[in-house]
Length: 155
Picture (cartoon, rainbow, N blue to C red):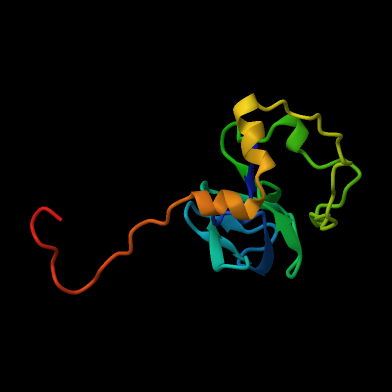
């Protein structure tokens, strides 16, 4: 017997986290492959998370209403065979089996870094000497597009 860890998948482009809105299984329940385990909601959609394997639910990783990061374990299943759990994936022995996954929502920033001056070629320095208005005046606008009648041949 092994343990298969199911992590919150990337449920949409640019989505980093999701709120757990519903568990469709409970600890101790036996689940089948492709059975829906949970429903999560992102800022874009509500998505159902299916089981990729058959097994018995050992642990639920979050409570309804909690936010979970993409890639965080949300459920552990006892399965036939070796499973996919690595030593680092196992919960701490002192942790309760119903311990939620807590997401740190604080924004972390890096300290400001001093940027080094970039040397520019001599030709570019002359362009910088002109005020922005003069540089824009040097650029010719693209010809206007006409709509309606087709253009004469050769135009």
